[in-house]
Image (cartoon, rainbow, N blue to C red; front, side, top):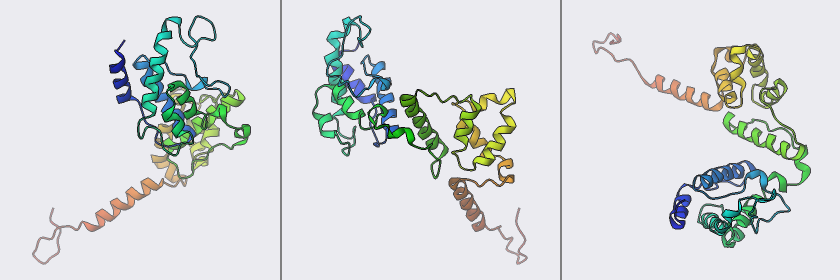
Length: 260
């Protein structure tokens, strides 16, 4: 176990900062913060543990089913709370536009401060109107951004409805494909490979974005009428403009022949 001052300094050096105040960014921030906390021996609540009825003013220690940490960690809890608070109150860690920014900075209990940080953007604290939200559409987002937004949407549905998005389920995978640009072409290419045993790995959660990028870059995608992304089109136009400005060198003899 590191000494308290060393532990706090190392924790602060590696702990993340929150860039934007949307539910997806807040969740990713908390997951990164938990990872760093566990690496440096600091207990931090899991994302799923936040509930509206719990303020976390005290962390129960003991051997009971409701206890969050063992009894021998009781003396460490105030130190952990201070470490978390000292990080959250630093400048540029939490955006000043957060509705509870002042309370977070001035609350010496890091666990209460983390609850104040989470509750405006956590699915458990939101109104149940979230259940009627439509599935996210890609629009002008990149595939990576769209995938993250969909992941958070599936997580919200699991919190409220107990549903589980299974990437190995054909219907669930098609649901995601239908929300992407050029959905009809991507589904056609998907249907060509989904029953091939050696291609099953392409449609796992860790590989689906890369697979769609490969589809978009393939000649079959263009032949089927697919349109390249804005980024690809911009890069192509730059390359065309560059090639147009390069002229073949003349031999200088007035013939205009190209020198090779």
